[in-house]
Length: 308
Image 1: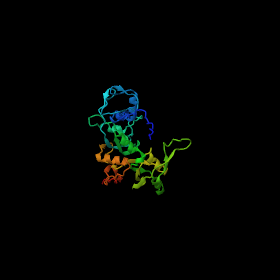
Image 2: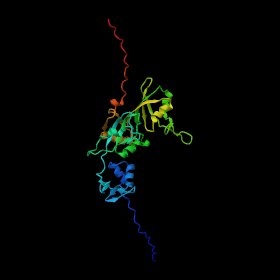
Image 3: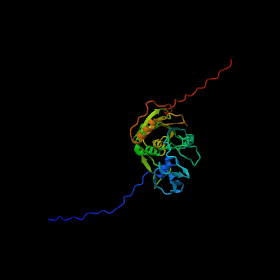
Image 4: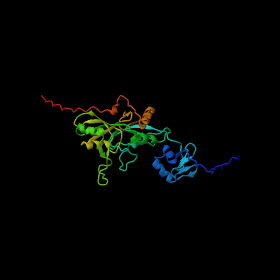
């Protein structure tokens, strides 16, 4: 008995699309310290970038910085900039931005003397913000990936502040802050669709640091909304007079106002762990600049001596 032969299935010759390798061009420019990714995109679209002698003016192309010859305005890139990490003690009266249209002093002016390993200026960016009147611990780095990870609310990185307020809040008011309180999402004067845009804050830790008519509180948050601390205390009827950030993850403020220092490899590792949502523990000993100064005692006037 003859076996019937079934027809063989044939598959058409199709070419598999080859996935481009390497990093996006705007990322390569940012890592080389040319500009931020957004500014790098503008540079590319302006036709100022050449890859292996060919102008590239479209976004999304991938390249290998170790093999391709990449030039910006004719200048050859020298590879990725070394990643740097600093702790800055921001004084009051400085803006946490690269440039200020109102010409107020910025934190970049405090860091502008910092140079890279080859003597070139390192482009640093602040991680998060402290408003104009707030002071204290501010992270500065050129590691965009770590900065973005730390800034995401999902990471839940703890930030600790010393906050001075006018008047004494009630226990009920403080419990509102501890459990979460409704605040305005945007600026206080913004009204959308006839109502204010409100949002519930995450639970916070609040402990009395120093009593008195204008007490100080130690406050720990896991988020960083616009003017959040001021809005939280305003909701319970108290004006915030001073804010000083003294902790970020496992870091504690240990440099004088206006000064900065480079983080140790261990501190950078701890920041990376905090960005991944892992628990980190600060050192037991609180540095001088993370503590409240002793209150100044008022001098009593001595009575004038009478002449004999």
